[in-house]
Image (cartoon, rainbow, N blue to C red; front, side):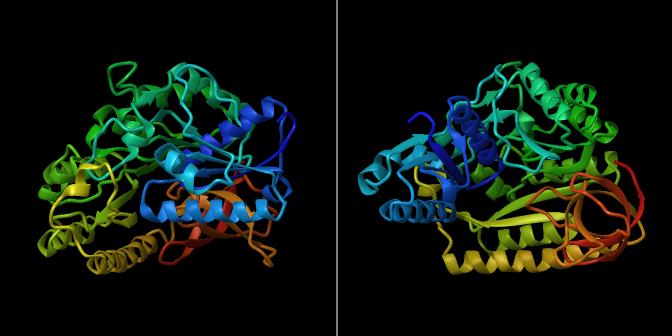
Length: 424
């Protein structure tokens, strides 16, 4: 197997992307060549199994690779990740063309991760923990990923220092529950301490972004660090999932409606201009019309800058799988459409308030067929999942450049503006 040409397809979230980068780093160290999937003789697909839609995408991708193998275009197929971890034995019986199912990797606590980066040179994801400290009734992640594990502060800071030396400008901190970071190895919530150490150790990195912050584990110290440390984006991805007390309780979220509202209010008071991204799940068993209307009113009243909505997926092995009062698929889809319709209007209104403000924007690319128009993101937009800023500049800009942009127009999810002054 030495010296094979290896291509990889990554599916799912940024956490999977980090696993893929680590897997490729290991293979490269062993002498394999990392190539485009169409040039590979060994194809690896890193799968997702979080919800039914993700499983379908994973299976479809595997079937596409099997077809390429039948045509002689690839020689070996390796299926990695959550789908292999959860259903590997069953799939091995049905998909005999697959050469191996390898599951999910173990996150080392103290060792520096060797990686082949699959992100642009100015951007990186850093995984600080694996699995989840919670046991939400609807979620299969702890059953797939196992026990919650945090990396040491020292190993994370070393990785960030290496990325900083390579010229990375933006770090996105990821994990299933980053706000529980350190509870296993330090016996206390240690994310604030980690962020201070990262900020002090970096020179080129200008943005440190927090993704997937579990609300029940947010601390006053963490909120203060986000508010006062200039390198930390005033952006928090905080999945609330619902607001009805009865639904929150059946979800086992460990937080009440009033505690949630108090937390959001505290964050907005202490972090001026903060942008909050959240996600909600509609159609959990027991979500009747009254409880859905309670959620809809909450969304209208609290006006989150970024919202994602998911339809409840009934997952085998979870507590919610056996709940009574399952909601019909048609009603779940209707509720998703209603929420997103109202959020679209809210988002547009909030975007219009940014007209006239000057935002720091990270340039990612030049818009195709447009000489003076570039596409970038503000600190209020995470890669891949949020909107963009269309930037008009008479000066030539490069990916990774930071520029100050005067916002002149706003759309439902995107912004547009003119370069006001630049700094790199």
